[in-house]
Amino acid sequence: MLTVVLHIQNEDAVLGEMEDLPTMQDTMVTVKHPRRRDGKDLIYLDANVTTVIWPLSRINFIEIMPSAEEEEIIGFIRE
Image (cartoon, rainbow, N blue to C red; front, top):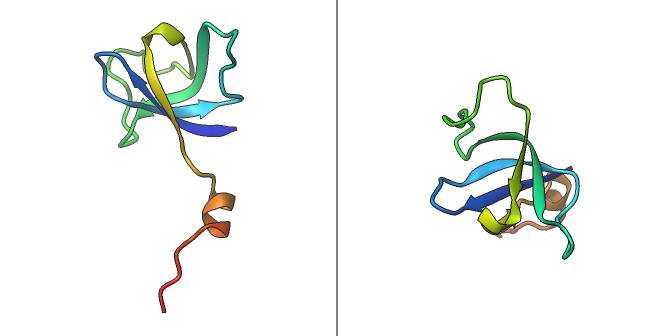
């Protein structure tokens, strides 16, 4: 599961999880547990919504957040 930040046209960024990144043939993107970057609910979704499908045409870009394992491997060391 990938943690991503979706930057949607004319909306605040959305944090969520995706199974896989969209491919060149995809027209939609499915995001599980969508929320604002601060963890609060999105005001335009019902409280019990767990999965949202957005058209890729509305997405400006997708940020892929590092997993906990990657953060352990790649880090800064100060001496």
